[in-house]
Length: 147
Image (cartoon, rainbow, N blue to C red; front, side, top):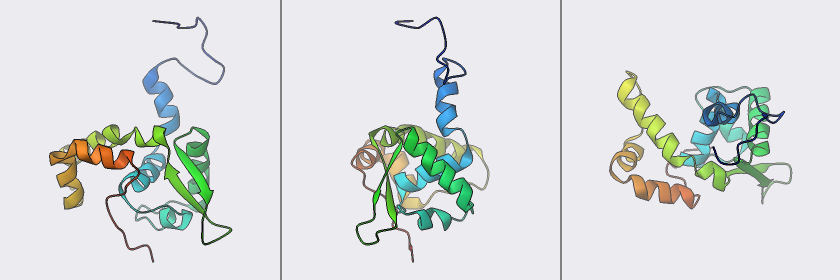
């Protein structure tokens, strides 16, 4: 391995790429937040709370902080509300698009009863490169009613 140190840094349990990726992404809530930021117009704390999976406030706060600390998302002040924030995927977060697409398709084709909205499924199966490019530009794909 090129430039592979003999010791593991204190912040890591292993040098395994998958193990270290799982340290950041390895729970359901983290992936659902990334899903919402990547594929929908959810950008605010209250939007994530309203998702059908029912994340609790304390878990959501923790996962947003972890994702921000890992450089996967960024947080900026809401332009219309001084106490609110807008969350967005960073370049590193948007780079997860191919993985998220393949994971969603794997679940759809492997787990009975799994669903993807038809416009998103069509993009994933028939226009994958265009979808990855849109995500790379920070464009969301599904307009949800966020009232």
